[in-house]
Amino acid sequence: MSKRIFDEPFKRMALDLAHARGSIKDVAIELGISSNLLSKWKEREGIAKADTTSLSEDQQLIRKLQKELKEAQLER
Image (cartoon, rainbow, N blue to C red; front, side, top):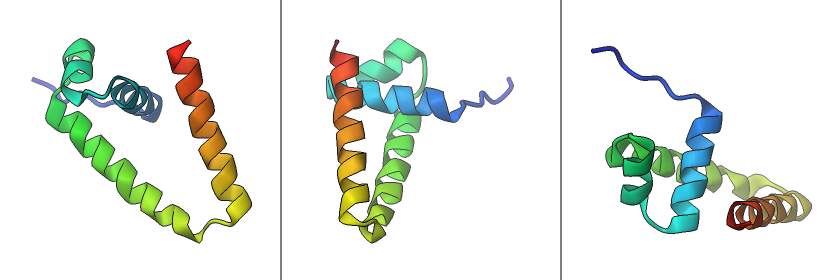
């Protein structure tokens, strides 16, 4: 059995869905991946977000607005 490799856009989409729906388990089942794998991706994302503290106020605002836009697009 070969190891499946997921690209960054797929990971981002899976994390966005999990965030929008509030359930890692449901999204993992829907996408046919392990909920543990999705949890690891979320954890890594959290670590990456912790690095954003060095961003300027304007950069943080831009990131926040981009996130809100993505969520609104997912809802639509």
